[in-house]
Image (cartoon, rainbow, N blue to C red):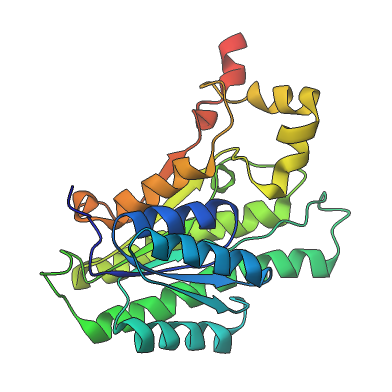
Length: 267
């Protein structure tokens, strides 16, 4: 079977764990060179790099804090130096520091905004600049570049325990739409993926150890199960491919139906 991303290079931020790891594996399986950005746990990034290379694609692990402008610029420059170009930016890195609005410290607010929103902007901006510099290469892709933001169902659903996270993801939604409007005429596609409840380390306490908590979350998932990182990875690889060439400026929700507000089934 022809690999849909052969000859392309993808950067995935927060790529060594959870959803980012699944994105890296899915993009690599489709033939892309994969740049694994990570903030900590270098050994996990190197292990992932080895797995991707064993599968036949090339990979590069780069440490960097994507909330820092100079780190993002260096990351993109190194990716281009190594692989000659970039074609896909998955602005995936994100953190949580939950707390109700009256309890949040300014530091807890600012750090989430810095990583989840400002970091996403910096990665998308630098990718777009590189895409514009490269121009359209029809033999590689129908688009001049693809930017995929990892958003959340919480760009739509309020969450009293995480106003900083919701504000950041709501901001990502409008950032994505605004950049899509700007860049579509240059054949650069910009879109988002909105995961629901996905089994990652960030929420392992809920799905792995506390049955009552797990069941409570599952009540809000009409499809009846938590999502797996691979559910998101496969969507990212498809969105990056020419099969999704007419998609831009929208969020694809991968949430088992959480946005259907299942509590309304009960009247």
